[in-house]
Length: 286
Image (tube, rainbow, N blue to C red; front, side, top):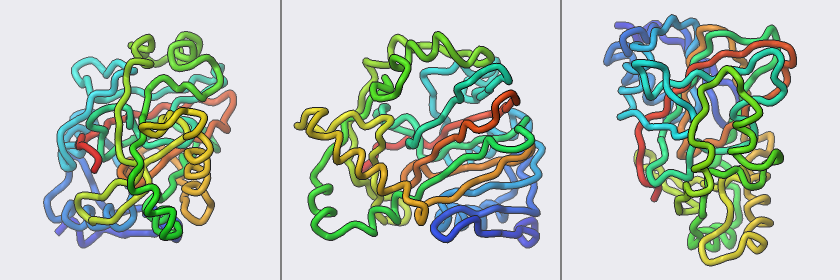
């Protein structure tokens, strides 16, 4: 049985696990996935090492979680519209995916899971940080939990609080190797989701707020909302709630957007980083 060879190594105390000894070509076998699903639910972030995945393999792994998600702002690879090349060239100074966030919370049905596969990585640097928003929620006072339970976040795609003039302006000046699109539509993409959501499988609650995408709370102004949004974001990313995945070619990492924030670190000037990204299993947060 393939799962018998699987080795699981915790990355940090609150989340994250490395998995070795399995082969996910073709999507892996059922026994492996039964074991891997438990690792995923327990650890929220899983880095599977030493993989050799084609585009078809990556789609097969994604289907283990659910149907693929469309991503509005990067054109997919020809023949594989849901898989996107995420590239930072040596001459570029800004990277894709920086700042803490959960993926595409501005969509009515955001993806439950993101998969990222490393093709080319810097000699050092280029890691990704992850934060456990379930543990962050559980650490709150009962009074704060009661208050947040009634709040709805208004999430936008325009990157209004990010320096550089918003998404359209940034897309026009960076990421030369990536096939960006629809930047001008970003300000119109908006979705309302609970500030605290419940995981459909574990039934545990987590915070669902970030400074990158949550512009305000429903019924409140941006000025009224931002201090609390900032505080919640800072609370989620306290070191005790985080882990760090160090990339190497052949690493496939997948994480649970329902209870995880992530942040791609931009600390590798003059080097190239090439990843492939797939988001899957869209659902309405509740």
